Image 1 (cartoon, rainbow, N blue to C red):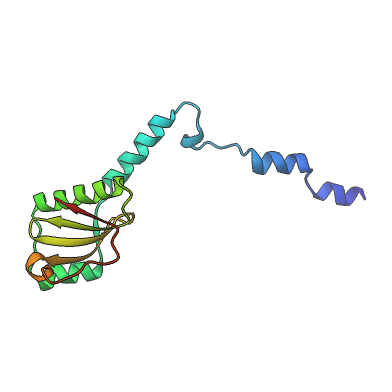
Image 2: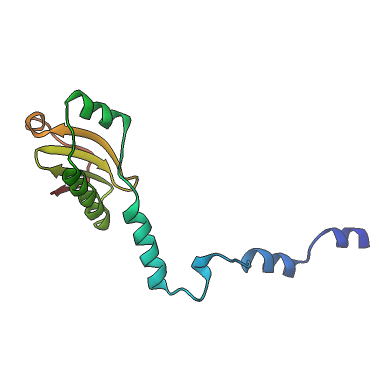
Amino acid sequence: MNEIRNRFASIEQMTDRYLYPKSTDAVTSPSLSFEEVLKKKREATESSELKFSKHASMRLSDRNINLSKEQSDRLRTGVQKAGEKGIQESLVIVDSLAFIVNVPNKTVVTAIPQAEANNHIFTNIDGAVIM
């Protein structure tokens, strides 16, 4: 009987181990306020770059679309604003270009020049941002 008891931890030890883990994670550190943690999370989210899917990259290339730095910044700002409103799939219009963006992944799914977008219907979006 003693052999069996020595192999297993007590219920108290297991409770302490799994319910009250000792963490060195900065998020659980009492020295950081909730506001500071939230600010760090926002900064990390804002700093992440916008990605273009393979399909979107091909569309830009096929249609000879070159985004200027200013247009790229406005697109990034539009995606950020969509994210702040809780939009998941957004239409972002920058100048004469329409972009469908997966906001949580910050990925441009497709790009369409306005001349080609006049007869298009945009589906599966839950918001639009005009920059």
